[in-house]
Length: 168
Image (cartoon, rainbow, N blue to C red):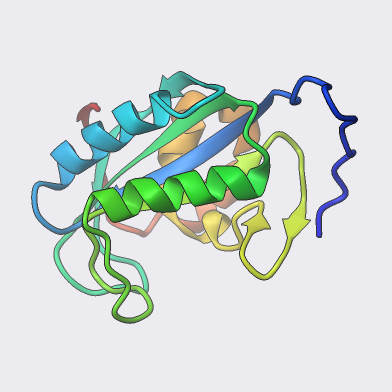
């Protein structure tokens, strides 16, 4: 479990900044990401702060066509597991299926960071355990939150094929 402070009844929920990785490689992936951005902005107690440009990259530990990716920054009052449940609902609405690990997908939404929280539960790990290994996470994250990405992490993924496209 996380080491989050407990709130008293009636106390306003704490606002956190969450960074969400977005990806898709089936169907009209850019349109799926645009729809997901709108859905993120519509979450209760949530404000979309910023979104990176759209990136195209080769699949990493996955199969299928190239992925389209972006990272969004949210200010939210949703607790981490409620945020995860909301992301999974958005994925399901976009037709996400999970036939096997790393299957091609219509939409993938990952919690990358929530402020400086460290969370290890059976359903959620924050920071995202593989984000430092993936250019498709680090480049868009560095675009909107450069202080959250170390130069050595970017150096380690420099050989991964990735292309910056346009704004989402």
